[in-house]
Length: 406
Image (cartoon, rainbow, N blue to C red; front, side, top):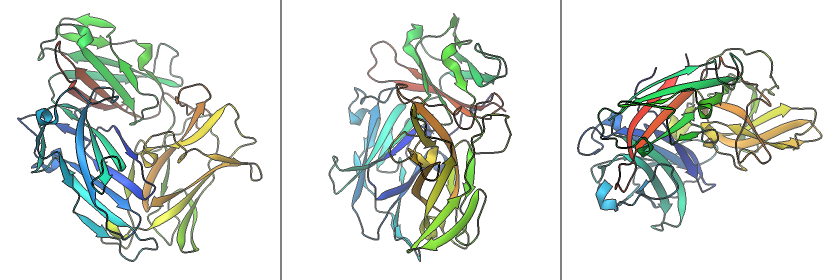
C-alpha cells in the first residue's frame, strides 16, 4: 500500500522542435488550505526546458482548469480557480556554457506570488511565444488534490485471467466518509501504470457499494500487463561509456552515444532496478548540469529477422513524454536487419521500454512483442479519484494514491 505522493504525474507535450528536456517536478499539488501560493517548496511545480540556441525568446505561460478526462476546460471562470494574474512571463534563463551545441535553459515555479490556485482538479499550463497564445511551444498537465477520501489499494499477481503469469491486478477501495456522496456515479477513478496514458483506465462504477465505501475489486478493467523492467543507459560522460553504452564519440561537431543493441527477450523474467521510465539530467565534471551538460545523439538498435507488418514499434518512457508519435516510432533498416531510432538527448541517465502498437488497437501498446510480460515486474501505479457533486461545474480531485507492487 502506498501513500500520497507529490510526484504523481500526468503528462507533458512539446510542440516546437527547438524545445528539449521539458522537466516538471511535483506535478500533483496538495490543496490543504485556502490556496496554493508557491511559498512551500515541496508544494510547488518546478518547471524547466531548453531552447536550442543562445537567442533570447519571450515566453509566457497561462493556466486553464480542465475536466477530469482532459478533453475540455471546466465551466469555471479563471477568477474562480486562479488568484492574481492570468499570465506571466518567464524571465529566469541562462545560456549554456562551453557546450558543443548552444542552448538556453529556462526555468520557473508555479504557483507563485503572482498566480495562485484555489481549487482542486486537473490543470493545463501552456507556454507560448511572443505573447501569442496560438504560438504554443509546450504544455504541462498537472493536478491539484484536496485529500478528502482515503484510498486503499494493492497489486496482486493472481488475476481473473491467469495465476502468476503475465498480468497484475489492482484492487481499490475508496472511503467516502468525509464527502457528501449522493450517488456512486458521482465518483470517477483514473488509474495509470508508470505514468503511461496508452493503457490508462477510467472507472465510472464500482464493483461493490458498501456504506461509505466503494470497492473496485476483481474487475477486468484493472488488469494490466506486468511488462518487464525498463532498459537503462547512463550517458553521464563525454569520454567514457556508461551503463548500456557501447561507445561515445565526437563527430561533425556533435557527441554521439551508441547503445548496445537490445535483444528480444520474451522468456524468463530477470529482475533489475529501474525508475519506471523516468530520467535524470547529469553530467560529470560540471558544476551545473542544467547549463553545462552536452546534448548527444543517442542511437538505439534492435535486431530482428524481419520487420513486423502488423503494427509499429515505439520507444516508451518519460524521455518521449510517454506518447506515440513519429519522434519515438522506430524505423526498420532492411540492410542491417534492425529497428533503429536516433534522437538528441541531454546528458544523463534514462529509462526506456519497447512498446508495440498493433494495427487497429487505437494506440494501445504491449511489451510482449520485445520484452515479454511478467507478474513479478515492479511497476508504479497511480489512482486518481474525481468527484463531481450534483450541480457542480468542475471535477474535484479528492484523492491520489501512489503504490508499487514490491
